[in-house]
Length: 562
Image (cartoon, rainbow, N blue to C red):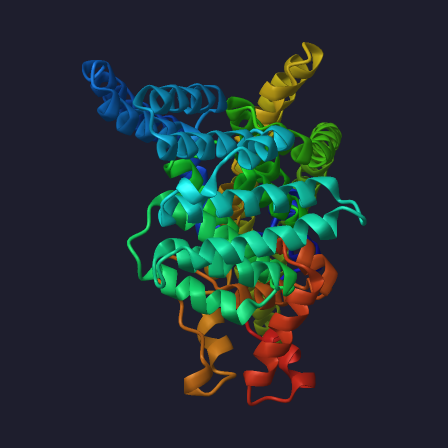
């Protein structure tokens, strides 16, 4: 057995290595997290997708200039340009909608004039100009439109009505506009070819308004079998996300809305509503960093398009996130100061412990010299040789045991002191740099730069390195721990370690228990899990063992260090 002072010193060294883990957050791998990472990467490449649309527009405009004398060809090209701009930027879409009207009048073609007005109505709706959109829709002679454009006309009418209902939030007018939206959607479906994208999309819209999740899932599956553009994928995923949200399945809703946001960016669609809703989900999940980033990008997108109703819709959440972000930055600044102070105190305690261990070693060495001297005197006294022989043997055995324990403790002490000072020095250096940068940025009121600086801190990587260091140190101290721990289970229930891990989460919890840290709340703080998660892990492991639950931890505590 090691002396109590040595054991306490070792425990303090291990605990010091984990004190910074309280700053880290939990992030469990899931499909949602994977989609959010894809969205992050897609946002970074947003300019590339915008350039693809701008390249297509440049080519179409070049063709339009080349066909300036051919009014019919110019109308077809202007129609394609207008379609490209309709989800990209309001000003250009508006100009080309008017250009379509001018070309239709030049052709003296009433049917094409109605198409031009339909495009103008859609553009006005996208910018939140609902009155102007209604006025334009009322000016359209629907009888002159082909079935395809009739379906588009009624679809636009339906969208304008439902968006006005959502914008008004009025108990008197909202039901009226909602009912009109349903009726126009049914009419649009009537003029669409059964099984076509337009027909299925209207059916999905109808299922969304009726909160019919099963019907929505069925129609969505049918749409997935069609060749869809990224913009169409975004529209359908957003509609199904609304159904899942109304059904209380918020995780699935977030996954679909994230898919919609990804495809909005890839198709260079600039309304930003899907990204705004993903930001709201992230805020509710406590992922403030992503919520702040996404709401900022969504507002940029809405400003780029000049979608007035979207900016109004985003304003409350944007204000809430901005305020929360500022509050967190201030708290982190205070925490950084407290952490620096705590590390200084811990370093002082560590040095004190090291001095205590050193003086204990010196005292034991002096005792060893005294025992050797007594042993020499016993040899010189032949009269008491046999009486004191057993005593000498016993004292020598204890001395060897003490020397062995001391040598082992000294070895562990050297390793852990080196490990702790390396880690502590690294963290102090990082905190010092961070403190200086934050002080400079906050003094100069560079809040955005301060936020970026905080965002660049890779807490997850630091926690992984921290766990790896603990695992390595613990396995070195208890090389037979995994084998003896697995001996408490049947072959089928034993833990198999992955190649890139020294300990699993379950093994790490019971490793801390073996070191004397048996308080679940303390373990949860060290490992960054909730206390309920720690209880769940402990219960699940105990239930798999063939030992009774009440004796399992005592058996783990009995595992020897060598």
